[in-house]
Length: 140
Image (cartoon, rainbow, N blue to C red; front, side):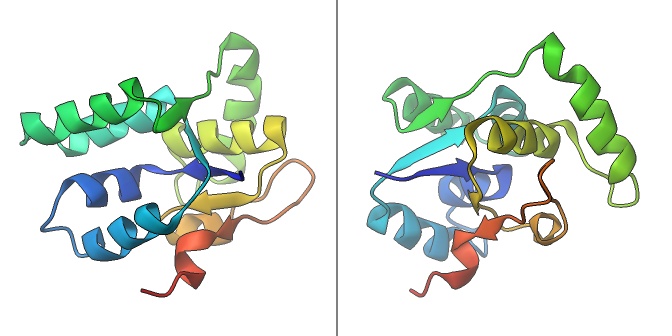
């Protein structure tokens, strides 16, 4: 089964039926047979964006608890790389959640990401590898 990175936007879209990306993300998640990898900064950002719905927030946590999302940790040894990325992409600007996913991509050699953001068209790994946004090519 493949591993793909999971960004904040699809989590929020999946948990909010009124989100314009909800149906597409839901269809993708139903069709995908693999593992979603994400980070605590992504979960934190999603929880903040879903702050108006405790039910949605609890659903995110339940998804994690049941193993639907695998949380990959970053730590203090990654801070220097986070700073490099923030400096390199300061014109976007890059946030902690995005930086954490790039670090995980570099560490685990993963290029595929599920995201609704165009920023991943610009971001590159340390080896200059582009990201492949699997949602972009997914047809409902």
